[in-house]
Length: 442
Image (cartoon, rainbow, N blue to C red; front, side, top):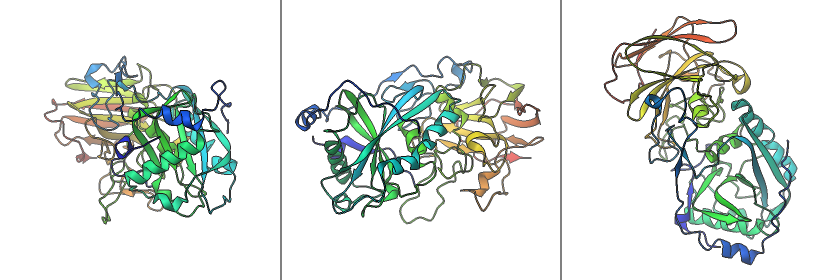
């Protein structure tokens, strides 16, 4: 098998993240010989046919007025279609975990111990986030498979050279294929021995193939390469699994040598910003994109006037989850409620969270920006990844007006059942599609 520089791309343009119930063993297809495996990979140079299929939001009550279009950018936040190159996170989805060791280093942990670092926590996170609509089942291999070269030979790093990354994947798949059945899995984790010299935890990421490669009858389009230490960063595998289902990075990656903050876009909100965040449950916008919200759970606000809404917290099933105000061809203002429960049990503040969405901005380029409902103030300084946004949600009696004056959002109350009452006033049409990244709060 030959993997070339053009065949592989990290999920993020400039790098990866900063860092059990087990599925039954697949039956059916037998072990492919290594020679057959190499032959199956011969057509690897063809480009992936990235097709758009009808998306989960296409029939939503929000209607076409609030369906931002998918753009030709990596992990577009558009909701008018689904990229058919990605599996859907719906129902029971099977994941495979393969463990790789290296010459000159004997693993100190068993595969079961390493798997327990990530599961059942990762599966539990996504099942909770999806209100039980997405269940990830892991099959973890039981033995370490020895790579042909020491980890140091692959020069593993965050900004991994494409040729070195290709060599690693080539050797990993060739090593695993004689004994591992890849059939039937939508998620594949290649896990390196965390104690081997040369393994860099900052290099954990999803690698997308420029063309799918069929192994054991399974067209593999992407893999998660895991280089985490033991114990790993919290929620790191949940974050990477989000990429497998087309979610973008929401953090900012400063240029080399810069001391700029990584978490200015969304702070603690949504684990695609930071797996360390205090409120990692996905934005309601992402739950809409992934098909977990019903047609009656998204409200599209159009036209001049005042409307009243009750928002059920993002973390709990049922009720209206998301209000959308279209602000431009590729942009929208999103409104949702957040509370301390489920994945967000450590959230710094509860309330109504506002953020802007741009479907024309790619992963890592700020497709979502949380609006600070309390500019000039911060909270949870000892635990928040970005205290300036930790208290971003609006509380009862508080309002936010977008910079152009076209929209004002006011939280009018909180009900005994946990829902938040919101008044949205549209006083003018939106003149531009610029982000509402500043504005008046009171």
